[in-house]
Amino acid sequence: MAGIPELDVTSGVQSLADSIVELLQLTQKAQMDATHVAFAVVHRMDYLLTWNCTHLANATLQKTLFEYCSYHHLHMPVICTPELLTKPQI
Image 1: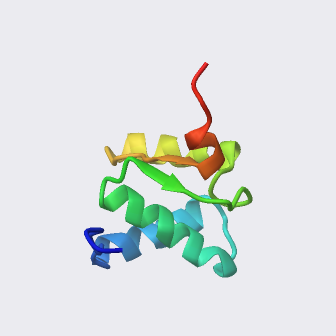
Image 2 (image 1 turned 135 degrees about the horizontal axis):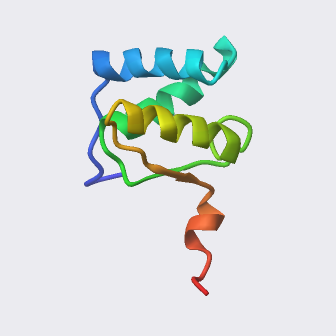
C-alpha cells in the first residue's frame, strides 16, 4: 500500500453520501456504498472499481448519479467491475 494516498473524510464527502442515499433511495444499509461513491466524486478519482452491481456498478443508478453530478458540476468517476476495466479493447 506504500505510495497510495489516503483520502480525507471531509464534510463534503459525508454530505454528498447523504445526498446520494436520498437521490438513489438507498437503504441505510447501503450508506457505505454511497460513501464510496462520494469519496470518488469529491476526490476526483478516475475509476471506482467494485463488485457491487446492486448499488454501484448498476447502469440505472449510474444514469441518475451522472445526471445529478452533471447538474451540480461535480466530477463523475467511471464505476465498473475490475473485470470490465481490464477487458481487452476491441
